[in-house]
Length: 60
Image 1 (cartoon, rainbow, N blue to C red):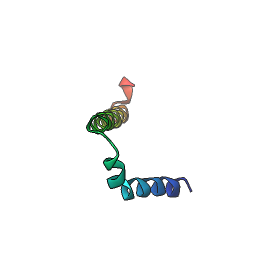
Image 2: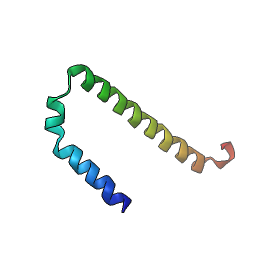
Image 3: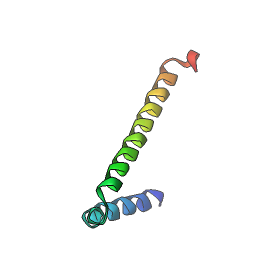
Image 4: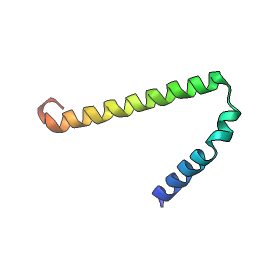
């Protein structure tokens, strides 16, 4: 059920993306891009840390 809700939210976001972008200023787009980059970097660090914990359990 949760996966279906997330899939619906993603679909709606992608479907209406052109209309959403038309109402955003360049500054808002720049801020959104930077925030999404920060979220992506945080996820990457979490994946790397989890992998290192599994690879080297003595260090955890």
